[in-house]
Image (cartoon, rainbow, N blue to C red; front, side, top):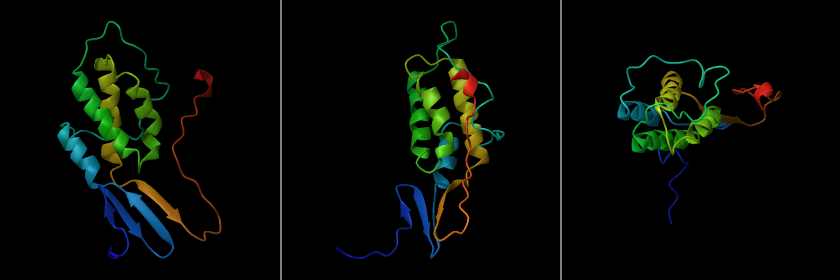
Length: 145
């Protein structure tokens, strides 16, 4: 065994270790995903999902390519390792991999547009911080639960 020093890059995840913090992010991977699904020139979105969105089985909608839909979901799930703010909505759209329609495909593209606008996001852990501060995205739609 040999000591290679501090971890800096692992499986597409960039790790920046400093004396007082550790930052974990994926900047290259989201751009690669957007290019793979021809979304690199799309407009970005501020939110990972539309407010009060209720996805259901779309019996009358036209079906989309299930392999393509699953590939996008797999890519988004890998991105949730450093982007927990999209975990909820990726879980929602992942429920419809069996018979995905254009309605579900539109929501997946909305998530990709959000990813486009937030490629530099990641997780930062700090040591010895006087005041703890938690910054996150929350789906607080309690009336539909």
